[in-house]
Length: 163
Image (cartoon, rainbow, N blue to C red; front, side):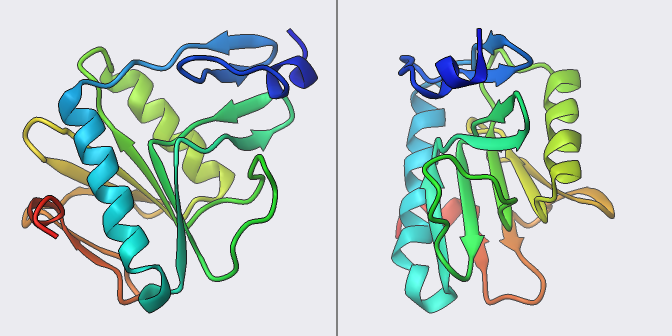
């Protein structure tokens, strides 16, 4: 399949794309969907205060013939204008699905960081255990609060459902 065909075709659910091959994404469960919605809403309500823009399931072009779709991505500053984003976000959020495998998730985290995303947040929607990754490495968020250094962004994971 060509890149042009991929970009002009709607898939339900949307697929990622790598070198001419459609890559199906693992469908989320109710917990996955609920967390994705709650996180997007949490960021959206704070968009002016934190000077950010939040997008769920937005196609992002990492390179020619390579497109990934984060569960949620957050851009700081001016709003991206492209219909398919080509610049790295401040924060790329991956919410795990039961079918996700560690090796594939780790490969995706590495690829997204190499693309230039500043942070990748990986969350288990059942337990809310999470890890924050950057080029400096990854660490578990032991207190359940995402903090982005140098910004006012602070997301208490357990509270996003209450907000």
